[in-house]
Image (cartoon, rainbow, N blue to C red; front, side, top):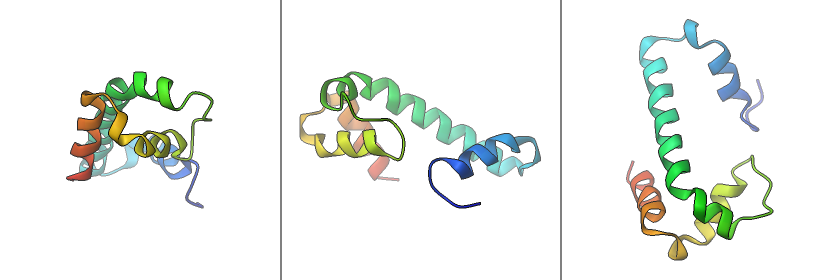
Length: 84
């Protein structure tokens, strides 16, 4: 499968029952982190990235370009992600 556009993630989700327990756990952790990031950065995404088409990391790149202007909770999510 060619990477990009979320194709690998979609494939892994479709075959989740067949994945190793460790891989399943990592997927659940990643989904939780994504939800936390989304919850904390939703308002900033609407403020700074209105009109940006979702997908391909475009919203994330937009938020990163406004990192110094982000709300403290959203900025903290960026800092937390950068430390991992």
